[in-house]
Amino acid sequence: MARARKPAARLSRRAVEAMVAVVVASLVCLLAGPYLYRLYQRERLRQGAQEISTMLLAARLTSLKLNRQIVLWFDPVNRVVTGWADDPPYNFIQDPDENTLLRFKIRSGIHFRYAPGGDRVNGPDAISFDGYEGNPDLVDRVVFRPDGTLFAPQSPNSKPPRRPRAVTAAVPFGSIDCNPDDSCRGIYISDRPDGGYEANRNTFRISVNDFGPTGRVTILKWLPASEGANPRETNYVPPPWKWVD
Amino acid sequence: METHSREIVQRRQYDRRTGAAFLCLIAGTNVIPWMELLLGETSTSELLAPSEVRIAVGTCVLASLLLIGTWLSGRYSAIPEKPWIRRPRRAGLQFSIAAAAGNLLLGGIVRFLGSGALYGFPAALALFAAAWYLIVLPLGVLAAFSLGRAGRAPGRRKEPDSL
Image 1 (spheres, rainbow over the protein chains, first blue to last red):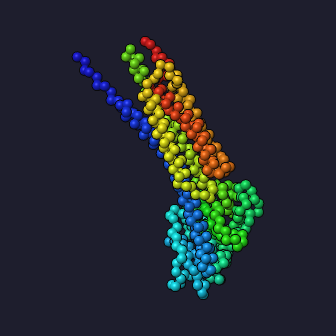
Image 2: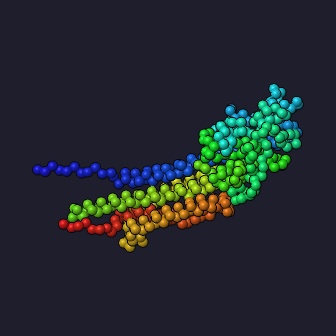
Image 3: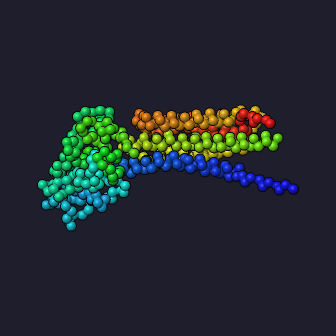
């Protein structure tokens, strides 16, 4: 007598449908994941730039409101920004009797780093507001006079920027040129801690009073030469920005 | 007779697999234009509002659920004597390719023009959402229903050689 054949194991209809649903959901997550990660990285950097810009504006407004000199000191190692009203003898250092008026923690994931170039994270050009009253040790601080104007830093790396030689579609009105010697003042934040001169990284420059005592705070983004920057210029441009991911 | 019924079962399984693959294609390409729209917004100085991210991600999730639901309804709903989709397999493939192409086209337009470059982001979002909800999503839903129906009524294929 022939032995009855055992029916082949089959997945039930419900199981197949559940599998299809899981596969579709997984595929959607798989495709959306990289997009959302890129979005998160870009937003983190943009948000960091906006926060620093807001801090500068708050410091300027405080100087106007109190009619006192306000110093905003960036501590890139501890990622803290501290602001205080500087009293005579106006030494740009927070003395024990000078209370903290503004305090802000820099979010993680953004790095103080100049672009282009191989300058390291928290390097000397990362926050180029250096040198006051002939003292080169007074670095990484933005100083507003009682009338809200910027107390110009004196170090060679903290000069005011130049206007670009040519205004193009990629370098629109409102852009700056940091040449010669990549020496213009600003607070530079990047999304990547590593990479050399030609590294693909996104870098924002936050600064104030670029072209005169207007008190205007600007957020500009580095435009690599490959993206259309003017020849022999280091251009930082206003939006619309191009990203390198 | 037994061979013939086994053939039909195999065809149905084949059609189900094809249907599932095309369902993945539609759901997968649905993500592209919405995410390109969000990424395009990062070229401006305005930060993305949480509601904008919620709209984009939520739409992708809801569209996937809708596609799966429609696919299931195609599998379970009774086939009328004169169905309005006569060749569900072919219609499913055509609609899915059209939906995927629509998604890729929209994504390409958003990437090329940059979201909000012409009219500002809110207007661009409204235009984009109108195009997607009125054209691409209905195509995807039709495709999903047809693919589900095709799993029940296998398409015409080459008959096996009779011995």
